[in-house]
Length: 113
Length: 113
Image (cartoon, rainbow over all chains, first blue to last red; front, side):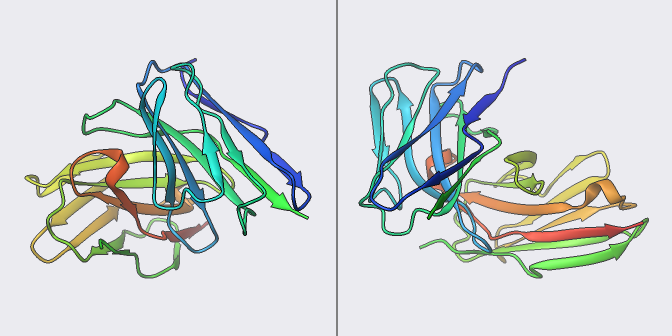
């Protein structure tokens, strides 16, 4: 089945540790996105990529890093520089530059202990 | 900067009732508006996409309207069912691309059996 797979679903991290969230899609979409969702707030864009080997910062990129070595994969690393990393992280994909739907993964919930 | 507001934050209705969810945005120069559904702990599912030139879109029991000049959209749900219980988010795009999406914080709907 076509879709977006995020892993892990739940992740606990100690302060000072980097963690990487996985996002894989088999929808053949060029564009992929990472969002952060906090309770009672809308989604905020962290990073996005329109094509392989290229990515751009979103509104809240500080403390995060990404890579786009394959079309299907867009992993997000939450670094120790992110001051408040506990949140729900959502990955999405869509057709680059075309108005249309976004398809979302099931999300990853990161908790910093 | 575009701001999207959804009021109320939460709504409970008895099964079978028709209901309206509201979304307002501050910059009327939008390209399109989307309504999403989010189940607890899950990703978002696109429900309806309205282009700026359109007044409304319909899908089954859902009808979304757009009044660009007043900066408002409504999502009408007919004959509500317990399975409609979820958080509904709206998002606007200034240029049609997902990288320019601004999300509201959502309305949490509970349909009581």
